[in-house]
Amino acid sequence: MIRNVFAFAIGIVLVSCGNKNDNGNDTIENSLNQRDTLSSSNEKVPQTVEERIADIRSWYEQAVNLPKRNCSVKTKKTFDSLGPDSEPIEFQQKVSVCQISDDFELIEADFSGWESGSTAHIYKKEGKIFFVFVEGGAEGWSFERRYYCDQDENVIRYLEREADGGDEPNGPQITKKLNPAKPSIRDYISYEIDEIKKVLKTAI
Image (cartoon, rainbow, N blue to C red; front, side, top):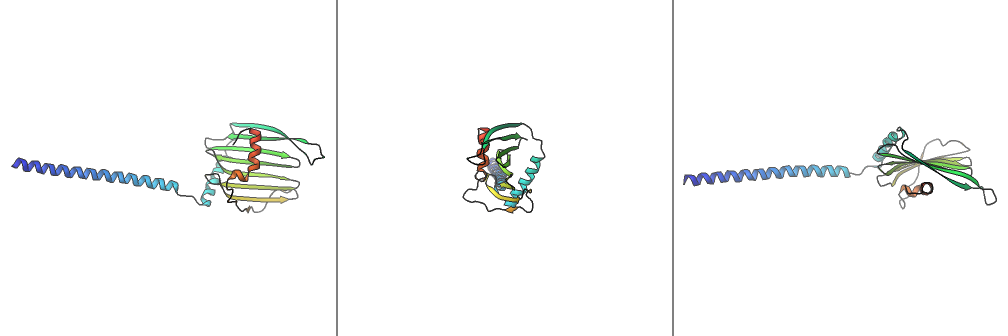
């Protein structure tokens, strides 16, 4: 009888301990799951435009201070004329692609034509375009354009300034209206992208 009571008591203690261990494991697992959820939710919290632009400016500063290395340079001859009755003149289009670090890639393209020209500086981080600076002009007019992109290469801010009379662009940059129908930077700089493809004979 005493043995039975003692065995019964031991059984209750073991069951009780087992339940506590299960609850403890559940608590730990729940805690880990909660931590993972918080971590995931933090990673997916969308940035504001200003936060993204602050990141872009930081990346740009890093990229421009790195030496240009591992560069591949290609050129292509084109012809342009003042009009149908004028003699075409040969111009050289030049594109360089530099992997300046493990994260950053810089594509620079120089385009020239009859009394006109432009240079596009395309910055990529981990394969995605995050910032583009285009400068150029024609016949006494010059311009600068800056494009800031989100993680999907959509333009979130477009700045521009111009000058006439052969002057360099100066003064405040004007914020241009974005096109919601074509948000991609590849739409905004489609001319530059197409010309780069012609020189490189490959997509970028």
